[in-house]
Length: 311
Image 1 (cartoon, rainbow, N blue to C red):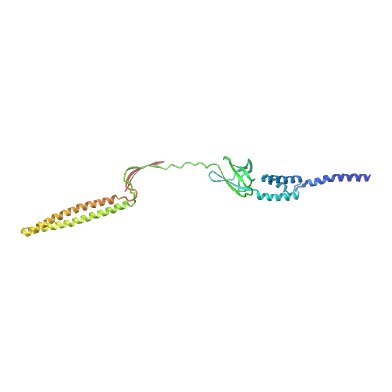
Image 2: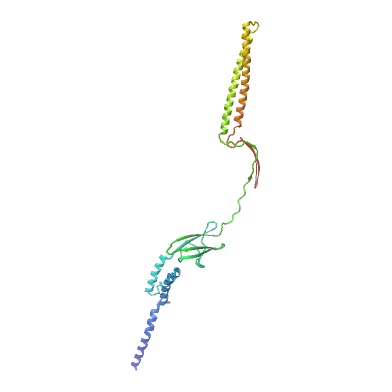
């Protein structure tokens, strides 16, 4: 009987051995007491390789992270860790920055790639993106979403993209300046040469100098006429001989000639002095010419009327 019992126990142990071995190979204890099937780790590794070939690097990264956990068999875990390192070298990253219409930085911006949200805010960190053409949508409260089409290249690291969301804030219009109009009341056109006024003043001084010389000459000839007149009277006074008469006649003629010359010199000199004075006084002092103008100014809180003269 004991022999039969031993035989039965042996048969039960042999029958249970394959089940126990399968159970040992198919489960691995977690540190927290739960368990992860080893087959799931192997499937995650295989699926990650398939996603990698399709260019879906973000999804492949998620699978590799599963099979790289410590609960997976060491052989599978080591292979997944190696594939994660390779994926880090080829997966592109983009750094987005956002500003509002006034140029201020925005951080409360959600980012979606092809309709799937990948970030809840922009904090300056790089986002891992699959290579290829994608539609990036940026949203913030109170503004219309902004979508950008970007072509991302495999292995491209730290690409920067600046996004503007919204329009500039409307500002109140600035006060209108006073409107000034000018009414000309007759003016002479400004000279074409800025030195014209100086040339006119020089001409006036020259002509005035000639006039002063004429006045001086008139004075000299006036003195000569007075001298000749005195000589004529002295030579033909109480007694006038023939000789004295002839001298008196000559002096009288000189008196007339000197007097006429003096008168002409005085007249000419006076005219030249007056002309020179006019030229000096009317010469413009700048490039603007001479003019009279009335300038009304009308604006918010402003009402003015100005009379201007320019010489």
